[in-house]
Length: 159
Ligand code: MG
Image 1: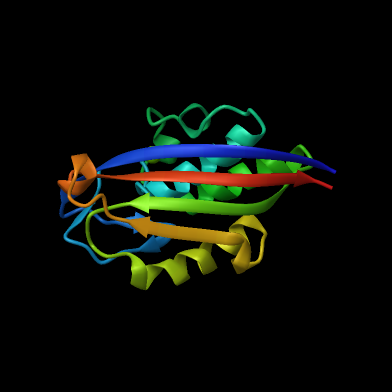
Image 2 (image 1 turned 30 degrees about the horizontal axis):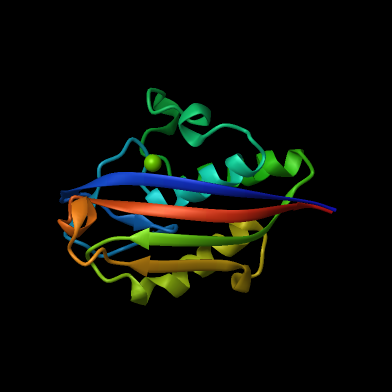
């Protein structure tokens, strides 16, 4: 059995009147993400962690924001494509751990739904997907409500 680890990081700016998608779930919010895709910064970090585990580059390289093909795309589709890509190399996901830094809204009511949404796409049980949320105590660009920051770690396994 071969085991590899990956980490991913992404940031998106917030602006008023845009939709907010995080972890594959729509979040009721006065602000949303400025992005070429649906702006799901949590899924983007997760994709980069998976790609990183197998040294396959990053999502900016795979799904360039200059391409109309990916304009406004549901990031869950990008995640499906990345999982398929690592599957082609004989790997499956072991577990994933995602940390979202956002000042507001509070994400606690949405964490369960994010885990349930991400698990089948990753091909793992819900207890193998962790999503955690934190504020930054009003410090920095996250604390000022200017953006959202996400870190993701994954383990991938080749049986
Ligand atoms: Mg992104």
